[in-house]
Amino acid sequence: MNEKAVFVQNATTRVVAPHERADYWSELINSYHRRLGYAFPHGGSGFEGRTTLRRTRDYQLIGWESDAVTYYRSAGHVRGDSDDDFRLLLPTAGQVDLWQAGQHARLPSGVGCLVTIDRPFAFSLGDGSRGLLMTIPRREVDHRLGRTPELPATPADLTSGLGRVVADLAAGLFAEGGDLTRHQFDTISSHLVELLCMHMIGDQPTSPGHLADVEAAVRHYVRTHAADHDLTGATIARALGWSLRQIQLALQHAGTTPSELIKEERLQLAYSRLRSPVYRDGSITDLAMGLGFSSASAFSTAFRRRFGASPRDVRHG
Image 1 (cartoon, rainbow, N blue to C red):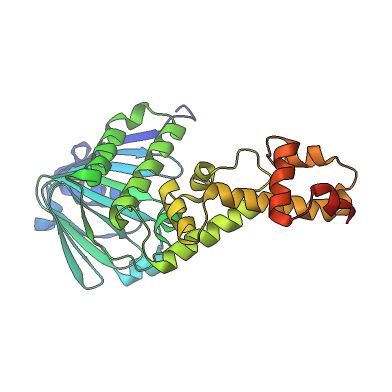
Image 2 (tube, one colour; image 1 turned 180 degrees about the horizontal axis):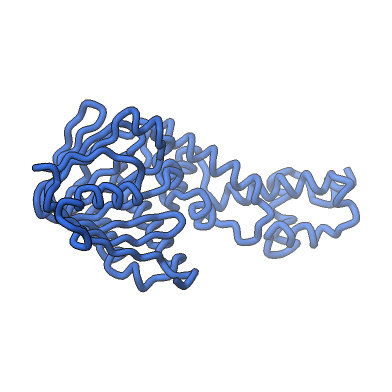
């Protein structure tokens, strides 16, 4: 396989005898995820199912079609084979019944659900069910929604609006995944997760706690990357896994903007370097250009406005 290509695997129970199909299916699904329990009607004799897998190091997308079956994870399964990544469950035909944390969710075609398999759960599929199941690294969800160890299994309507865009993107990624590079597949997957989380929170972090978390993370990132010439709101968003809109809203809540914050941190870093013996031999112009200012005069004007003194005065002060 080309090392830059997405790994693709097709599987069907028809390659084994009818009485072996339940065991074959159980081993197949376990290889995709973690250790699960299975309940097959009539013992699974003659069970039919098929899957198509698309996988990179970070993401996995499975299309399935199968007869009726119930999957479950007990507390013992979780303790013995932990996995904190999320799964996006999206039936496209038939219906899925999901139980977790004492709650029951019914997912008809087009209604998805973001679930964790690191807590006991069960979900049942009816005959002729089809759908997509995407494995998403927990960090990709945590970056966008905050740390979510007890994220409830809440159904999300993916039949209209932004939800429909998410569902269409998942379907397109599955259909074309075999012809994509790993980078392309991961980039599209990341955008899909971004849109899914936007859909789940209504496109904006409204709780004060979440806004504060976003603001703190952005400030820390800008402070440690202030000397990067390509630092912008967009590059911060990509690095932290949030949308630019989320970052703008969090900073707006704090009375600033991405560009103002970047400028402030660069000026603070410039002040520190002007006072430091380590940078004493360098010119002020080189210092300014090294921090991403367009010219020495632009730097001097901004510096004097911020600190009430010129860069030269601070260096010799």
